[in-house]
Length: 559
Image (tube, rainbow, N blue to C red; front, side, top):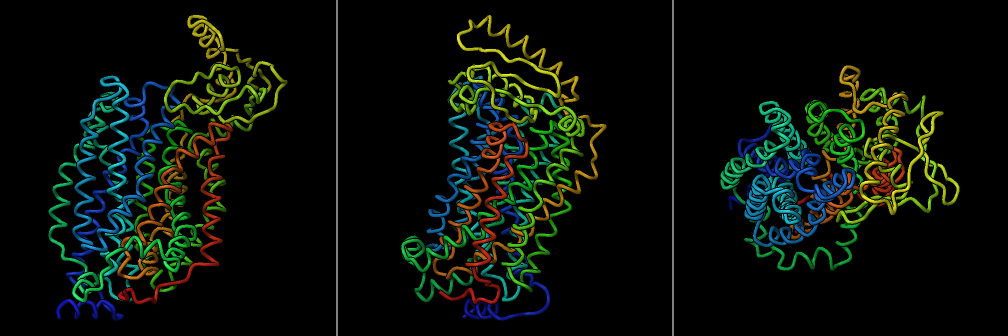
């Protein structure tokens, strides 16, 4: 009887503030999820350092891209976690399922902090690291759907956008806290000690966070909607079959993926992770400064998750998400060009005054990605492009004569590359040193800096631009949980909403940094990688506008 009363109460529209019980549900669910996101995003925030310790057997550019791939590995398996834990959540309950997920996440993260590096155990180090990332991805695949479903099923009608928007802040808050912890440890130990061994401390802190998270979640009661279904014998016995083997529901899953979560994901990762990597790797801004800039933007933008959640209760989920995707697609190029102008004005000015061009026979040019570290990029084209990519120098391409040595034009000056194929190791080393010296002199004379000058960075403008990117994130992400919950029936909700969310965020979003930087490395255009999120955002806008319904007035208690 008590369960039925609570269910009927949460189904009816209500004015006024939250009850104490509702605040406890939101706080406990959100706090545990914040810790889980903290664990997951530590790796992304420390990708450059992790590349040096665990992927030291390959060249610098490949090492960073491979570190990003290891980062993306956690995203790759999120849909499988969604299926496994979504099924459990629809069969045995929301609460116990995300207790399991947080245990897996916390333990995997802590072990990363204890893991020997490549220098100690060789190739076993990156293999174990990637295995731990896979476990983290599986756990996160079950976490989000459980937390969002649990909170939404406690929310009164007319306030699901508000209630679930607190869950939406947790990913950003987890990233924000991870950045603050990293900055605190780095500042305390100094840069050298932090990069040598201090980077492990933020991972080890997860042990304490795990204990707190488990204790908090043990205090929660099961969702009233799930309790009612179990009491009435209406819980699904085959949630995977009902979700994905029946066209009427599978169709909604596919529309939710392409018309909502794919675009939301690329906007999310461009506005937070790709922006961070762009500052560090492309503009050569000191990592501590880059983290502080992103942290400031997150602090300014995070309240807008709740604002857009509240707004979605009034005007709908769909229009806010669609406008966010469209704005991102239309403005990414000018925003990132402005970030270059205000973040590293020397590079911005040098591109205009002395543009760099690689003149080479396309037949001699390779796609320089070598995940196993065995390939040798020794053609004159590969040497020229690899040298520029290592220095994060933007360049354009010009077709050269067949068989001719590649050249690097820097304004009106020309630096000839060399053919490394067949050279003895000593001769190759000497040639490389001579080429690097000439190239460095040419770039320096043309105004290209080795790194961003801190005295020339326009910090207020960078924070403003990064905050705009975060605002796009809040538009697409704030209402998405309520929208997904409302699209699917209660008996298979956990399973059905988790898969499109984690394919969108795990695959479309998680592979964004790797894909974008590979596109940049292949073309030399530092903005070329933006075509990926722009294309996906436009796809989502079109599918969402024409094929997905508005759901804010739906009754989510239907089985």
